[in-house]
Image (cartoon, rainbow, N blue to C red; front, top):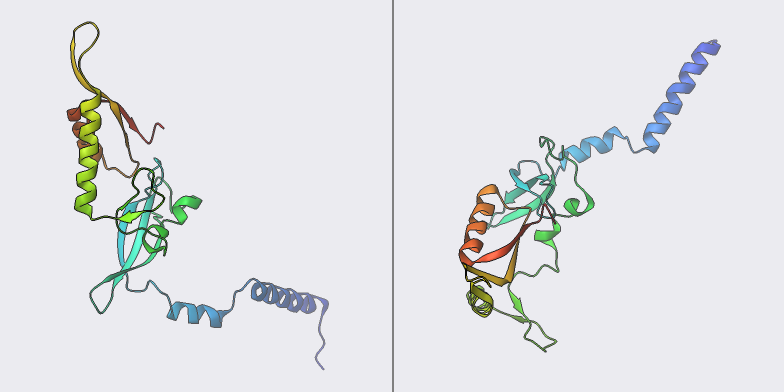
Length: 194
């Protein structure tokens, strides 16, 4: 039997302890090879977006693939590591962004609940947009102020307020502000300041 020195014994013991520790932490080369072979976003299309939840503007990367029937399937959403805003990290809300598109509880059509009713009914987009436009017009007509108390022409409506969203681009925010000002709104806000 070969003679094992104290130094050799310590080397063998340290190597064995390290290997056991790595295996306990889940580092198994056979599993790593299997995981690489079944990587679910391999070959997926990469699209960049912005998280819709708050005004920080964290960047997202969405991975999609086209199925054989021509439909697009969302595979994964994660933080964009190239973004100077979030550097790939997401808050708990942003980390659940994929549920916006894939949740079984997601409402995919406009729903309306009439005043006093306890039931929701599905509507078409055209009917919902017409109802919304009529409500905006009714609120504007009911609260429109042409002249203030001093007799100055103000042409404003005080019965509607608008809050811009954090997912707006600069152009969308500019357009929405122009539309709201055109309606006479004076109560404009942006989610970044709320």
